[in-house]
Image (cartoon, rainbow, N blue to C red; front, side, top):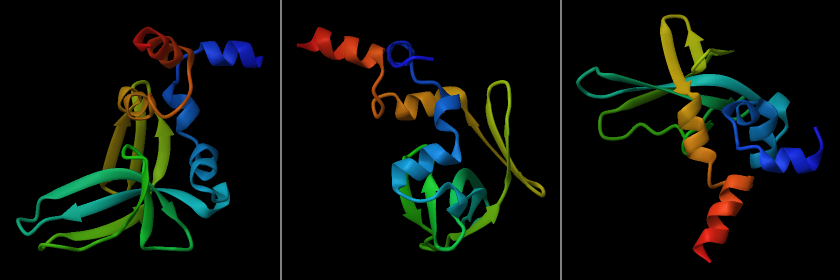
Length: 132
């Protein structure tokens, strides 16, 4: 695919959901990253699961995919947060993360929405031109 065609295509989740994409974005090697799930359990024993990328060497940091940032594992206000490695699979509607009984999911639409204004694409350029 030539560059001109690539610029005219909208951002798709499949372009983003790669270790190499996040490695380039955050300045690390793809081999330093692993797919994972962050498990947050509050004082009422309710669990919240989030699909993330874990740093293999630094167990206290992870890449929050939907918030596009590096975050630390923090236990505050009675909440306990742990990270587990997970298998990553593309599905028809998004991306599934699984570790034993734990399952997390990110839809393709959520990824495209989160990164829409962060990466150049022709649709974004057309919107900017309308606003001028």
